[in-house]
Amino acid sequence: MPVRLRAILSTAGSTRKILPISSLKQTSCQGFPDAKVSNSYFQALQDHTSGGTYYPEYTTYSATDEGLTQIPDDIPEETSFLNLRGNRISSIPPGTLSHLQNLTRLSLPANVITEISSDSFVGLDSLQAIDLQSNELKTIPDGTFSGLNQMTLLFLSDNQLQEFSPQTFTGTETLKDLAIGRNPLQSVDLSNLHHLRSLIITDCENLDLSVVSLSGLRALEYLDLSRNQITTIPDQFFSSVSNLSRLVLEGNQLLDIPFRAFRGLVSLKELNLHENLLPTIPNIDYSDLPMLQTLNLNLNDISHIRSEDFTGLSLLPNFDTLFLGMNKINSLQGRAFGNLKLKKLYVYYNEISHISSETFHGLESLEDLLLSGNGIATIPDGTFANLKHLTTLFLKDNSISEISTGMLAGLERLEKLNLDRNNISEISPQALSDLSELQHVSLQGNQLTGFPNGLFNNQESLLELDVSFNQLVSLPAQLFTRTQHLKHVSLANNQLSFLPPALFAGMTIDSKLALEIWNNQIQTLPNNLFDKLVVVDPDKSSKIEMYVADNPLQIDNRLCWLQEAVAENWLVLKGKPFRYGGGGQEEVDSLIQQLVEICGTN
Image (cartoon, rainbow, N blue to C red; front, top):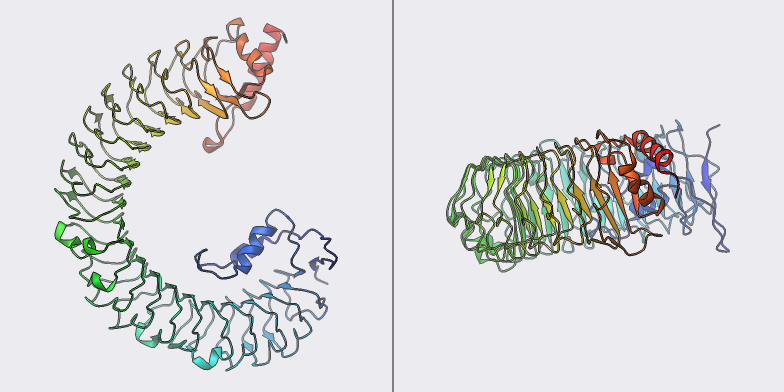
């Protein structure tokens, strides 16, 4: 007799604990964007059952992965959520569920259901969401869902369904979210679903869009046609979905897009063409997309860009985000992006070896610029000088060897700077002088042996600094004099043999400071390392976490201050951070114990 996992809730308001159902994570609105799913029932269930939390609104009956061959006949009539995922159920006979008048969510994915009748759901007047994906359905009788006047969400993906006609969805005027992908579709007509907002048709082999009609879907806001091996877009295919705001065509085989392919999409804000075969920026009539904000061309075959490629886009008043990552672009010449009024530009992981000092001219509104993963070796002084609104600059995984005085000039509002994994061995003392708003700096994995005096003198807002995995042998004594609000400093995996006295003197700790010095050559730590430290509330979370593993520390009375700081609860000693596998805590515990023996407990 299979074990039933039940959580029956009383009507008086008291609740019992709903048992965690980890398998539900795979059935929770997969594919639907959070903002577009009306009443995300399966998502809500995932959120509220994870970890065995309480969810008082539902009475749940769950029997998953138990090998059941038919729907149990002992399901309590008060059940509102029925989860029978991953069994061997082959049909839903008429009347089997009719006693479940309170049922709002029905989950039957990953069974072997080959047929349902037009009466399978009769009487389920409260039903709002049905998941029948990953079964073996070949047909759905006309009117099967008729009378389900509260149903808003329906999953039918991954079956053997070839046809959807208006009769399939007769009486489903409330349906808002529908997934029918991964079926051998031959004919799709959803013209009576006037209130449908989200439609997912993905992972269909060699889908011919000419067999799909979007006529009548006047409320549709989100359409996902990903991974269907689509090679062309029929003329006026989108002309009837004027309310569409997001269109996803990623993972197809588009080589070219007809000039008027997107005619009628007057409300479209996001166009996703990620992972196709496009060799150039699409030459389409962008006036058909007057509301467009975001164009995603990541992972295509684009090898070069010209300013004239963006003429049409530059006329769109709301267009501000362009993705060109993971293409084959090899250079960016002067005013490469024409007159685009971009706020976000992503050109990461291409083959760019050269940029000009005028490449980004005209992009005065730019806020985020990602150039990571290219072959850039030098950046001319003043390249970013006109980007007065830039807050994020990523240049990691390039071949830059030096940060010159003028390389970052003019970036007065920059907050995040990432130069990880370059070949940087030298930084000019004035390299960061204009970056007064800088909060996050990462120089991990370079060839730095030291820092110039005064490098961070103008970075009073600095919160995080990562210079791990370099070749640092020493640090200037006054390196952090002006950075009094640091939250995280990583000096790990270098060649440091000591830290200067008073390196963090005068700092104010109002939450936590994580200091990573693990895997260096440090033999002792000066007792005034944190001289004049101000700890706002040592009894709560205001403290320093110092990661010290894999250092040849000499355990003697010079380190007694460490034991005192730990006892006073403003310092916590740890091994390695979890992101590097943790570990080293036994070494640290041994250090503390030895210090107690040497220094006493006072």
